[in-house]
Image (cartoon, rainbow over all chains, first blue to last red; front, top):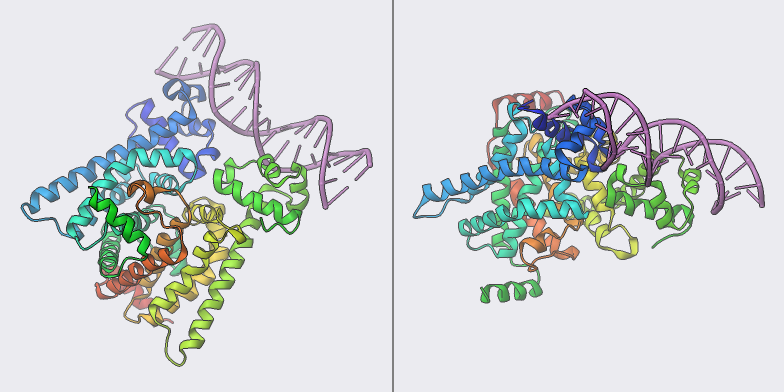
Length: 230
Length: 230
DNA sequence: GTCTATAGTTCGATAGAC
DNA sequence: GTCTATCGAACTATAGAC
């Protein structure tokens, strides 16, 4: 539960209900009931449904990004004066998110669904919150990927970053699809198993991008102009 | 618009509104207004909001899966008596979906958001519709991947399939994130560019999975038992 | 801080005329 | 098949007692 007060209890309940039903499908009544409080109390603490949602995102994003930043900083310090290897960068990127989704103590099991919906949503709220909470750390990791794999173009580093989180996040959102498609043979449910499969996949994919020529002349031109005006 | 009648007009409108607002956030009134009809007419044609949603999914899934099946059949016939190469299998898997998302004539631009939410949703409706419409074709492609790359375990083929669609689908859902993170330098908007980046990434990732030992002894055991009782 | 009561709106769905 | 009118339920948010 990790409820250290009414406010935290409401945030926990809201996270679960938002994850299960989406923003529009979640009702303040359902959140209040799950939190064990009355509905108007949520408005007292968080003002509106919109602000409550933003605060749910903010709490977890702050946690995850703190860990991501610390992991990358530690990696750079550890490898100095050389650069951290690609595998270590990808692990530092993914581990905090995957661990949050699999640690019952921290109660973030439901955040996965939220953040997947957030990252893929085309509504104004999703795009704004994603950019606000995840773009700064994304830029740092895109640079780290490029430092570890200098042959990669900037455009491909952006793609690779997006591919990496596209692979990792849905695995936190437990849909049971892997178990369904493998008739129960595969249902990756521990952090190390997930990392042991996703990290080699992603790193090999990134190296393949670096080895495969850029797709269009137009992008190469844009790419070159960006680099020249740096 | 591709509206060949009221029914199709309602389906088109519903697809857009569901994609923009989610199931719960979409109102029958908003769908009716976009379709240019009155709200009760939707109930006349589709009975309930639930059935309308299912029909929206069914229409596009039928289209995509027909193309995926035809592409795989053609590939197998073309390569016979040998097996189709891995790259060709992945292209056959991804092209129908990506083309649907980028062909204005077919009006499927909004289906991407829907199907991403569907595949990652943990609510009962999402899981049921995903399994119903996409598991059969998924099993065929998982087998095709394994035929093209026999060193791959069945569990890793399932993972690889899920990774592949996890990478490809979000690119149809135009969130503008790639453009945002690359300051406008990258905004993959044509089918060939997307395929030229995702296919090498995915195929290299799959080959890396095949070359990297299975993660846990437990899974290897489960895996072996499954194969023996085949 | 937490509660009861409720205002004001919007929803899915139906009845019934044409 | 398509419309107008409307029911009953559920929603967000606020007022105000304690």
